Each structure stands twice: as structure tokens, then as C-alpha cells.
Length: 242
Ligand SMILES: Nc1nc2c(ncn2[C@@H]2O[C@H](COP(=O)(O)OP(=O)(O)OP(=O)(O)O)[C@@H](O)[C@H]2O)c(=O)[nH]1
Ligand SMILES: [Mg+2]
Image 1: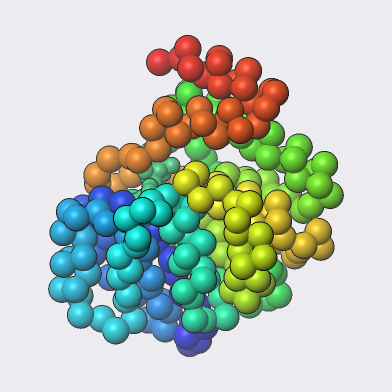
Image 2: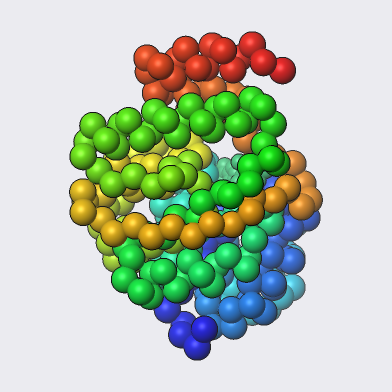
């Protein structure tokens, strides 16, 4: 891309099977981008695997053990970003590294936020699909009631933004944000300005490469329960599905 104005944030928890491959592949595809790994004390050798790369453009942050959470890791990653733009993505290859380039272009073209829309969600189980649909619906209603911009995939974990703007949203409203959950983008939209410029890119949502999912049924149901009253009903229905 010929421009070192982007940091790829990788929140990780026990991703030793993926993290080295992911960081080196990103660096190969985007030699000018920084990679910032926000690790929640995985203790599975991830740190050593990144040290092996010995790459000054790749930084491994060991987070405060008392503040574990996916959204907390993403918010901290944004606050620690030193480039004009950032892109946040999963480290298990469900978000293809090739999708970073088009998202970065969106931001260069003037968007405040770029959201990666999951095109094909057949990798999701029926309960995940239902929960994802329910959470999206409730989040869209919340944004509509607050007169905020919405995206077609509010629960997407693949998104980027203008660092300064996102840092100011987190600085101002961070206390009201859900740090333990899986919906950092929703919080940025909820607390961001009503006229925020959103651009969308699409990608095929793949299957996890190695390791295990951290998104269990409890996390999914807790997201739905926060979206009452309809979300509570959805949680009850989803709770009965295998
Ligand atoms: N720092 C940090 N990262 C996390 C935490 N939980 C999950 N992650 C990372 O967030 C990303 C998404 O987590 P996944 O477990 O893959 O969740 P998912 O993609 O919704 O679920 P699957 O489709 O089953 O993989 C991965 O890169 C995880 O390593 C956490 O508590 N802290
Ligand atoms: Mg995953």
C-alpha cells in the first residue's frame, strides 16, 4: 500500500495455533502496516511465537489479567494505535487477511468507519445464526431509536476506523461501554456521532483455522439478554436449541 498509516489490531486469547501465521501473513501482504496483538494472558506460547518473528512492526501486548474481555482488548488496542487508521480482525483466519486492503482503501477514501460484512455465514451453527440475527435486529433498533447510523452487520468483528475519532469516542463514553462482550463495533456506533461516515466491504466468513472458539453459548445468550424485551425472548428460545 506504500503507506505506514495503518495498524491491524488482533485481539487474541489462546491462539497459539494461528497467531504466528496470521501476523507474518499480514506483514507479507501489507509490509507497511503495523500489527498490534492484544493478548489476554493466553499463556499458551503465543508470546514466544511472536518473539520468534523478531519484527519491529509487530507488537505483542500482554493485557491486565483483571480486565479480560474481547471488547476491552479492542478498545485498548485502538487507544494504543499510533497510526491514522486501524483495522480490527479476528486472529483465527475467519476474517481473511486479504480483506484488510479493501477496508483500508475505504478509510483512505474518507470513511470514518469501515465495516466488513460477512457475506456467507454458512459457517455458523443454527443457534449462532439465530443469536446473530437477533442481536443484529435489537442493535439496529437501538441505533435507530438513538438516531445513529447503522451498518448491515453490526455484530461484525471485522471493522476499521479513523483512529483519532474512535479514540475520542472511547475516551468520552468508555465507561458506558460493554468491555466483556463481543460487540465493540455496536458500542462505537451507539456512542459515536450521528453523522459518522460508514463504508462497507464484504468478505466470505470462513471457518476457524486452528484452536477453539471462545464464543460459547453463555456469551451468546448474555448478548441477547441485554437486548430486552425481545432479546430476552430470543435468549429463551435459543437456550432450548442444541
Ligand atoms: N484479547 C482477547 N481476545 C479474545 C477473547 N475472546 C476471544 N478473543 C479473540 O477474539 C477473536 C474472536 O473469538 P472467537 O473465539 O474466534 O469467536 P468467534 O469467531 O465469534 O467464534 P467462532 O466462529 O466459533 O470462531 C479471536 O481472535 C479470539 O482469539 C478475550 O477474552 N480476550
Ligand atoms: Mg472465530
